[in-house]
Image (cartoon, rainbow over all chains, first blue to last red; front, side):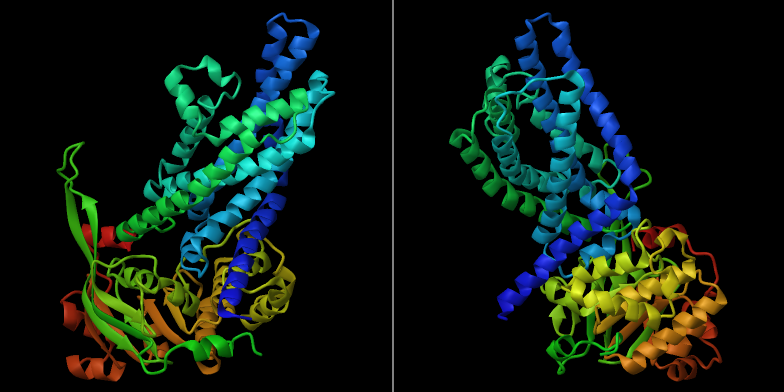
Length: 273
Length: 290
C-alpha cells in the first residue's frame, strides 16, 4: 500500500473510532436518550398545536401543522448536530480524555468529521422518530409526501451543518466555561433567519438577505415542499447547500485550528480548562 | 508478537542518529489576570512554568524528573506530547520538532498521567479499542491486542466489560498503562503514574515499567515527586524547581556533587528548602496550568 493509501486508511480507522465510541456511549445512555426523545416530542407538540388555535379549514390546518412540524423537526435535527459538534471538546474535557485525543495522530478533519458523521446518523434517526410520532399523535395527513426527497435534502444539508458546527465546536476550546452554550446561540440565530416556523418573506429585508447564507433556509424550504406538495429534489435548493458545505468545512477547520493553537498557547487544552 | 513489543515499522522508522529527546533552552510562560486589575483590565501577570530548560535523553534511556507540585513537570510532559506551544527554545523528539512536526511526534509518543482519564461509562476494553483507532489499529487487530495487553498489566479478564467508573483507582491506572503501551510508543511519558495508588498497586505499576524497559524499545521520561521511585527506576534523575532544571545526572553523581546520602538531602542542598515544604501561590498557579 502506498504511503498516502496507508495514511488515508489510518485516518478512516480513526474516524470510525469516533463513531464507534459514540455508539458505545449511546448504548450506555439509552434510557436517557429515550427520556430526551419524550421531551423533544412534547416540545414539538407545543409548537404544532398552534395550528389548532387559528381556526382554519381542516385542510389548511393540516397543511399549517405539517409546515410547523417540518420546522420543529429540522430544529431538533440541527440541535443534535450542533450539540455533538460543540460538545466535541466540552464532552472530552468533562470525561478527562481531551489530552489523549488531541495528542493522538488523527487529523482534525477526521476527528471532527467522525463526530459529525455520528451526529448526522443519530440525528436522522431521531428526526424520523420525532416526525412520525407527532404526525401520528395529531393524525396529520400527508398524501403527497415525497419522503425520499425530504430525507435526501436533509442529508445534503447535513454537510453544511457539520461545516458550521465545526466553527462552533471551537467555542469550548476558547472558553471552557461558557463556550458550549454559545453553540446554541449560533443554532438559534441560524434558525431565526431561516424561516423555521414562518416563510422567509415575513422577515425584514436585511434578514432575508442573511437567510440566503443559511443552509437551514434551503433545507426548510425544500423539505416543506417535499412533505406538503410532494416535490422532488429541487436543484435550486441543492446547489446552495453544496456551495455552503464546500465553503463552510475548510472555514470551520481553519477556525478550529486557530482555536487549538490559542488553547495550546494558553494551556487550555486540558481537563480543567 | 508480544503486546509489549513495538511494531518494527514504528521502531525502525525513527532516526537512530539523534537523541530520543532534545530540549534546548525551553521556556513556557503562562499569563494570569493581575490581582489588582480592574474588571475590564486586560493586564496579566507572567508566570514562568519552564525557564530555559536544556537536556537530552538517549534512546532507550529512562530519565526521571523530580519536582514538587507546580515545578513544571507536567508542563514539560505536555510540551513534549504536543499539547502546549512553547514561548522560547525548542524541543525535539527523535529529531522532530514538537511544534512543526507535531503529527509525526504524535505517532511516536504516548503517556500515562496522574488521572486515568477514560470515558467512565465505557468498559476498559471499549476505551482501549477506541483509543487504538486513533493510531490506525482496526478492530481485527484490537480484538486480540486489547485482551493481550490487559492480561500483561494484570487486569482480570472477567472485568474487561465493566465500566471504568466501577474500577478501583489502581485498576484504572493499569488500564491507562495498557492504553499507552497498546500503541507501542517509542517515547513513553509517565507523569506521576503512581500518585494516589495504594502501596501494592504502586509496586505493580513500577514492576510493569521495569518490564517495559526490558521488553520494549521505548525511551521513558518519568515525572514524579516520589524520590524512591525515581531512584529505583531511572538511569538519571533530574530536579525541576520552579521551572528551572537544577541538575540531571545519575543518582550517585547527584549525591557526590552535594555530598549527601539521599535525594531529599540533595533537594535541600540545591534549593535551600525541604521537599515537603509548602509551596507558594505562584506554584499553585503553575500547577493548575501546567
